[in-house]
Length: 568
Image (cartoon, rainbow, N blue to C red; front, side, top):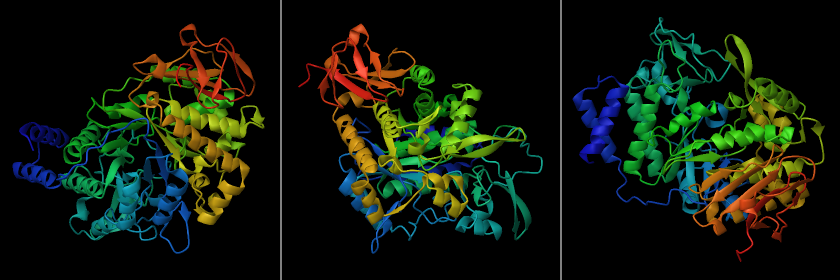
């Protein structure tokens, strides 16, 4: 390790811990990092137009006689090869609740899913992405058992605020109690529980916790994981009298992980998960020294609003104001995931009354609403619904355009600057899982349906709607993957096309290789004339037709990706 990097790491640790770390601890830390450096790094291109992510549970599809991870690999090979490049397997470790996000053992694969050999087999065919659940651990895990019994090292691994700790300004993502009392070998203790009583917050004020989690991080990288998602990272550090979110120490920790990743596994990517208002979210790019990738958390609800209202004004304005990313940084675009559709990212973008009206309409389409505490009252935190059923209708009620509206939502997402990600259920247009909610009593189960392989194959081979959605989305993804204009590093220019359209120009160095993407956001046929400088873009990649660009006719919810007529 050269002296500059060593100095940077030590300076960062000193900022986190206020220069309280002993010199020998710092020396041991540097030696620890050096010992985990990959001796044979395989540097890959960070991203290009061919990178498309699949977000999925490891057991989303199962088959008798196979481990779910093996079945997932076979399914992706059969149906999604050429469509996706990267698989984000949601936490695949032993867990006690929250479908994997209360990790009991960070170093083992959940035996109900398979083992590390299954992970390694997937890694041979796809780039793998995994979660580092950095903020908390299971109340039923090894470390917390040590905490309860006052046994090292776990006895100081969890955050127990002192009695004078001021929590009055804490921002919560949940309405459950912030502190949970546990009986320990040394008496009752109140422990910080941001998400639930079974998900106990780690104590990063103890530098050994940071070192332990860094060890987990490097272990995942050694197993072939090349994209690491830092789950719930915004809540990592607690300071009395503050909101206990986005603390300076948290940003320093993210930067530390980034620097060590770049040194030990060059070419691997760091993604931060921060479901917060947009301006807070993008702070995790830092000064180009934090996340490589940041979720576009504002996109899913903004897109829903545009398609419900037929008005893309807010979506267009948001897209115009997106900050240009520096080299080595980009966005992860998605419309839904295993979690609900966040409401907080709309703060400062859409008036609250319009957000409330959209939520009320979504309830009529089967959506549930999960709340959080704010100023002693319950307020919406996320909308729980499949994206397909969220687009069952508009603000005026259900109609016959659900499939067209849904396909446009996914197509628009594919065209935006950044790396696109499909949630597994969205590739087939899956409806709300009411039985799942009834079985678990958990709102998020509505969008976490799982299948036996025969059942899923029947849907995509024998049900016309699901079959068509998969066919169209894989086709459009294939087009995207062969157009350099869709590289995350290609410029994005938002077009002025009026409130009922959304349009962008993905501009390359050569105009003839650029793409104009336009979307009719309404349920009526509309006429559109392209701006004069773009009249030569007259061939639609999606329909392979030549258009009269003086007046383009667009059907309800039609999408077009236009190139110049001069491309063969």
